[in-house]
Length: 322
Image 1 (cartoon, rainbow, N blue to C red):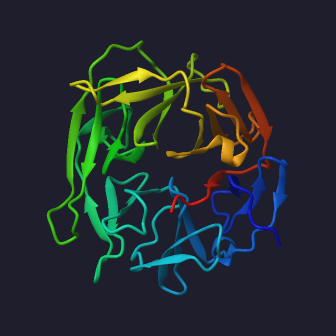
Image 2 (spheres, rainbow, N blue to C red):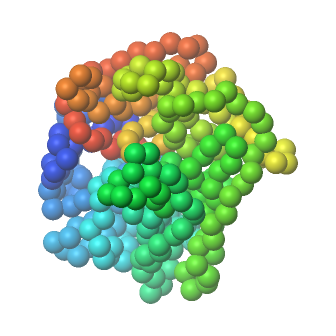
Image 3 (cartoon, rainbow, N blue to C red):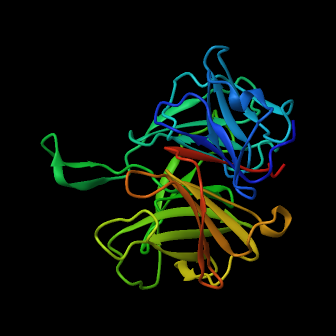
């Protein structure tokens, strides 16, 4: 069986589909996967922007990082004690083969994170419930008009995790080098600059070449058509104080890969045969909009689409950066 082409999509047809099927975005065809860790319906998978896939095998009480290029290349981790939602976001602070790497799982609904210092002797997953403020619910839900603010978009950059990127501020999450040290530290970074008011947008954070980017999928009407959006990309300028977002006219020859809920990654367009300076966004289908992959050129302004088999959710399968 041929190895997987990179990048490709692992598709879950329904919300309760136990295992994915794989789709070649170049040939626009379904493909087989020879790596058992990625096709066994007893395992739960989370992609990371670094290419490694976090695998939780409940039956074997095992948790590990899988290299999608090589079935035998695994980094064994302490077992994740809880079966977290499949829509959780998994991010690594850096290469998991280098000491000090933190594996972070962000739950999609509860204000809870799980983290682990990879490779640390006697390490274990730590559950941490955070409080970064409240936001208004309009309309109220179950009589409640406020809720705790959850972490949504998140990316690791320069040794820190940045989350909930906005135009005026951004959250910062820092971990100590050792798991035995203090709890994670949450803070907020004020940003300079003025922007056009955006009423309806989806926001993704992406790290690329040690730069932090924010991708905004901006909808110009109240009705949110899943593909009728404008793609805007900004790069964080840390050289100024306070830092500010600056509009990006290109992606330094790279390609950005997005998928719900808040997955954002980058890869070399030239090495993998992708369009340079292009954002590839997976769009899950519904009764009105078919499942597709939308490609948006940041540099030249064009949009194009690839039809994808009906899927409720998709994981990007990428080469590892180790």
